[in-house]
Amino acid sequence: MARKFWWPTSMPEQLVLVQNFQAKISVYGTALGLTAAQVTAAEGLCAAFVGAVNSTDLAKSTMQSMTQWREEVLFGEPSGRTPQAPVFPVVGATTYPVGVVKSFMRLRDQIVASPTYTQAIGEDLGIVGAETTRPAPDSVVPVLKAETSTGYWVNLAGSMKGMDALKVEYSRDGGASFTTVAFLTNTPGGFQVTPQNPAMPEKGVIRAVYMRRNEQVGSYSANYPVTLS
Image 1 (tube, rainbow, N blue to C red):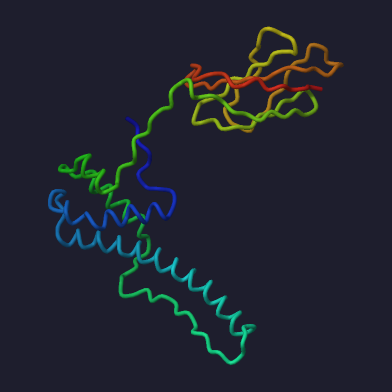
Image 2: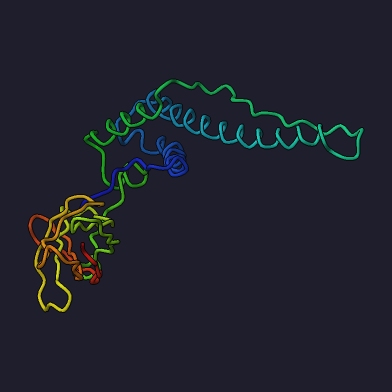
């Protein structure tokens, strides 16, 4: 089963992962062949990450309070009061080396490469990504936005959902059959339709279906009416 990349994209999620790792690495240190010094160093990396993130968030919050304090001092009523100024957080005695995230990633790779490493350990430490599940074929349906431009061009926007291509078909107004007119590998994307009569505007409908390795995946989209000119 495929898995997502283990390191989250958002900082709040990264913070949760690192805090979990920090709380549990000493439990697995011996089993993973880590020395006491290596476990301490790992905990130090985590402390630096957590401290840097939390101190910055507290400083931002304090800065907002400072702005309120300034406005109170300058324009507050009644006059004569002495509001207490906010105090910025103290970073503390934690050591903050440069490149903590890269060091943490190297530590993770070292742990995963250990001969005593197990999937269960990785999951408990939070250093393996969640399993990805493919949606049911019937639920994979393109949702598109179709716009036209001069020269019988159609522009489509919508998510590719990780597929290789989008097969686009066209049917002239009143026609019973669809003809493949384009394969888009990226969206937004455009293509030109050959009209039945180049001198006249033409109405029709566009539909599309996802492709993966030259095979159709899922169901066709809704029919999108277009007027070409």
